[in-house]
Length: 287
Ligand code: NAP
Image (cartoon, rainbow, N blue to C red; front, side, top):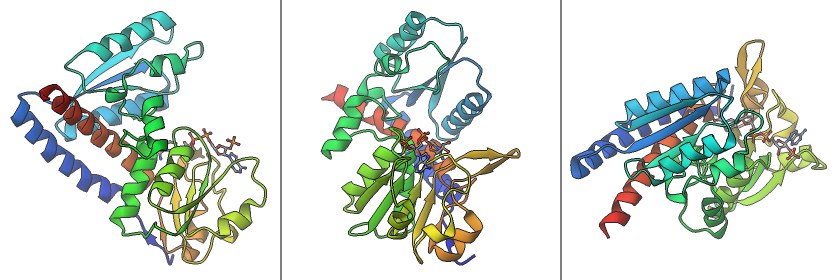
């Protein structure tokens, strides 16, 4: 493989150590730990793994975690009540409601009860709006983690052609806005895009967030491109990305592996967002 690996695990370990040190200083100064409340509704196995990893991440970074595990049979009103209580709890700095929610629960209504200043996932319309406006906001963890990876490896963004495949609210759209904020010329592609291959071949930075294994093939990639694979697909019990890693790795200058690329950065960015929410709330109260 010619491409250099962008090692999400290594960046993640470095960032977690930084967060741990900062959150210890916060505890010394304030006499309390930064606190994240994690709400899991139902027993989706993948969600249980994600929540466990998030709680472990909190332990590793001196962040207190409060875990709320609720049955899938909970009513909308009961779920809303849990989030409302956390929203007004002064000891809670961040609230995370693990998605997807069981069928029958209104996700938007529940998520919008998380106040923007405790919205560690960056999903609240106020945070999304501020991102669009180019103002300070908490940004969705996965695209923010991708930006950290690009920065850590010194990838030039300004003036480059960036192509994002995928336009979801949690990955594709915020990814495009973050690249635009750093002066890339951004194209967003989706399932209705025509000439996808030609558009991708023009990318200096190509981000794949589709959810289809090995969708991005070598003939779609420009020689020397930086390729970021956000995809997580389970194939024969193994995790595979959206990029044909081996073949694209022959053409790209940098590439992220799956697993060990974007995945670890997502949780680390959640921890960073939680830390920042805690600090901002503390400063706002002191004023
Ligand atoms: P999503 O909501 O399903 O969005 C997928 C996007 O891909 C959509 O915008 C869709 O277009 C587009 N798409 C589908 N088929 C396409 C095609 N043939 N050509 C071009 N575009 C196509 O998924 P998501 O939540 O953004 O997640 C994307 C992938 O990233 C998944 O594998 C997910 O598991 C993974 N993920 C990873 C992390 C991580 O931490 N590494 C975090 C979040 C997600 P339309 O809008 O037209 O339907």
